[in-house]
Amino acid sequence: MTLKGAWVLLLLGSLWASVAARTGPSHDKVVVCYISTWAIYRPEQGAYGIDNFDPSLCTHVVYAFAGLDITQAAIKSLDPWQDLKEEYGKGGYEKLTGLKRSHPHLKVSLAIGGWNEGSANYSKLVANDLLRGQFVKQVSSFVRKYNFDGLDLDWEYPTQRQGKPADRENFVLLTKELREEFDEHGLLLTSAIGASKKVIDEAYDVRQISRYLDFLHIMCYDYHGSWDHRVGYNSPLSAPADDPLSVKFSIDYLLKLGAPPSKLVLGLPFYGRTFKTVGEGNVNDASDGVGFRGPYTREDGFLGYNEICRTLSNRTSGWTQQWDPSTSQMLAKSERNVFTQDIHVVTYDSSRSIANKVLYAMSKRLAGVMVWSVDTDDFLGNCDLDEDTYADFTKVKTAPRRLNQNYPLLRTINEATGLALEELAPPEPQPDDSDNEIPHGSVADRKNAGASMVSLSLGATTVFLLLHRLAQ
Ligand SMILES: *[C@@H]1O[C@H](CO)[C@@H](O)[C@H](O)[C@H]1NC(C)=O
Ligand SMILES: *[C@@H]1O[C@H](CO)[C@@H](O)[C@H](O)[C@H]1NC(C)=O
Image 1 (cartoon, protein in one colour):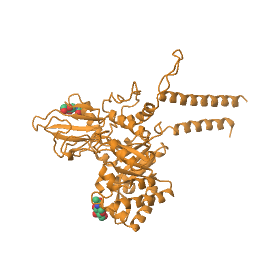
Image 2 (cartoon, protein in one colour):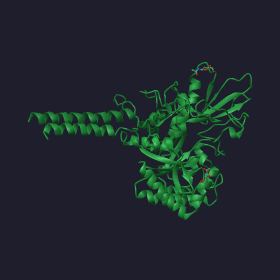
Image 3 (cartoon, helix red, strand yellow):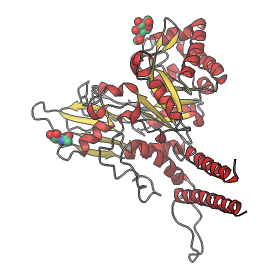
Image 4 (cartoon, protein in one colour):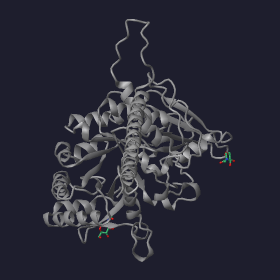
C-alpha cells in the first residue's frame, strides 16, 4: 500500500471513531427508554414502530414485553408476527438489536412480564428450584439468539396480585441465579420495581436484589388515578411529609433500605392519568372511577403525552392548563360538557416536570432516568414546545436551541441532565478584581469549546503530518 493510501485510511479511521463515539447522549448518565411494542397497532398518528425510535436519545432501550410459558419454564414471544422473522414475521427483536450497528453506544434489553401477565405464573416459577434453573438457561440463550444485551424483569409484582409471601425470597434467588448465568456472557440484568411503599415492603428484599441487578428501574408513576375516585396527580415529585405517594418518598425510601444510588434509575411517565368530574376540575374533586380515553392509546384513565399536547396545542379546544409548583405536576382540563355536565381532567408531566425530576435524580446522584414510554412522547413533533421548561433552574437563562421539534420530553431529559450538573455545581468563587475579564458562558459551552478545540487541533496535526509526508 502507498503511504498516501495509508494516510487516507488513517483519516477515515479517525473520522469513523469520532462519529462512532457520538452516536448517543453527550452526558454519562443512563437514559433507559421503554418501547411498548403494541403501540404499532394504534391508529393514525399514534402508531409507533421501531422505525420511529431515535437511538441517539437513549443509552438503553427495552423491548416490552415478552411473556412466560410456565409449562416450559421459558420466555416466549407474546406477538410472534411482530417480534420474530419466522413465517414472514416483521422481526421486531432483531430490528431493534440491529440498531446497535449504526449506534454502538446503545444497549438493548428484552423485558419479560408487564401488568397483563399477572403474577401467579411467576410465583410458580420462582418457587421451584428445577423450573428456575431451566428458565435461567433458556432465557440466557433466548436473549443471545436475538442479539439482546440483557433481560429486564417486569414481574408486577412479587407477593402481589395472586403472588405468595415466599416470592420475596424466591425473587432474590431468581436474580442471583440469573446473575451467575449472565456473568458468563456479559449480559445486563435489570428489573422494573414498583414505587408504592406497600409493594416495596412486601415484594422486595432491596439490599439483596441490589447485589444482583445492574439497575433498578423505579416505576415512579400511577401514584393517583381514576381508581381513587377523586382527582389526583399521576406522579408528584413531592408530597406532604406523612404522604408516601410521591417520587421523592419512593426514592428516599429505597435508598434508606440500602439500594445504592448508582443502581437506581428514576422512572418518568410520558403519559397522564385522566378523570371525569362534575366538580370544578381541581385536585381532590370527586370523580368517576373510570376516567376517559384518548384517540390513540384507547385505554380508560390513560392519556399519552402526545395526545395531551395535541389537545393543548389546539387553540379552539377550550382546554386550559395549570402548573402546580408543590408537586411539579401539570393539570389540564376541558370546558364543561353541556350535555353530561362533566369536566375532563388530566394530570401529567410537562417538560418542566421532567426537567425538575432530572434535577432531583442528579442531586441524589442516581444512575439516571427511565421513561415509560417513548411511544407516547410527541415523537412526530406535532405540538407547540413548552416555554417554561427550565423555569425552576436558577442558572439557566435561556433554554438551549433545538434542531428538532420532535421528542420534546426525551430531548428535555438529555438537555436537563447536562444542565442539572451545572445547576448543582458549587458556586464559583467571585473574582475580587472586577477588571479581570473571566470567560463567560455555561459549562456545556466550555466543554463543547474544549471538544472542538481538541478535534480542531487533531485535524490540524493530521493535515500537517499529511502535508509533511507528501512533501518528502
Ligand atoms: C399462566 O399459565 C397458564 C398455563 O400456561 C396460562 O393458561 C395462563 O394464561 C397464564 N396466566 C397469565 C396471566 O398469563
Ligand atoms: C380542535 O378542537 C376543536 C374543538 O374541540 C375540534 O373541532 C377540532 O377538530 C380540533 N382541531 C384539530 C386539528 O384537532
